[in-house]
Image 1 (cartoon, rainbow, N blue to C red):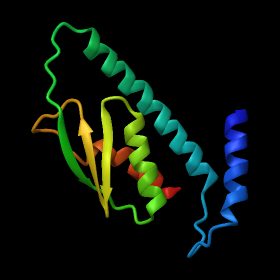
Image 2: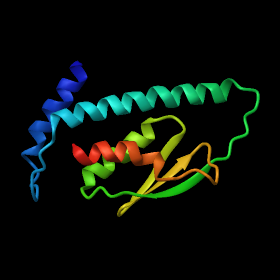
Image 3: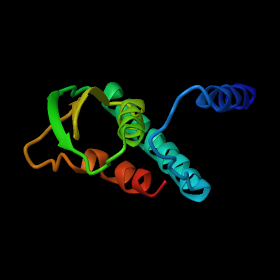
Image 4: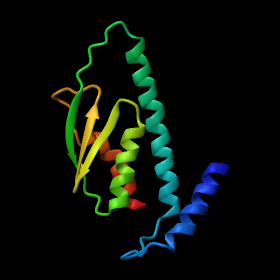
Length: 127
């Protein structure tokens, strides 16, 4: 909590040094919803990864997938990329314009790659 307070204070202090094109209002309600979605996904993915590690059958099929995002602001894309990276089993390698290149630990052909980011993207768009 102390680290979050200090980080927030420093961020507020340094925002005055940068010129922004326009200020985007951040909805505190949707920010709280985002934190719950992030926590839920962290717990679920940790359980899935733990089961995979403890199982005898460790047939992994890693892949790098390109996922298009509809988020328009750079900071929201960055938040999406960091959210994906925080969940075990996925890692955002690069953001190029509106495409995220994500390494997934398990990929199958039936996987809809937009589902990797959909839940996060829906909430981040409302922040």
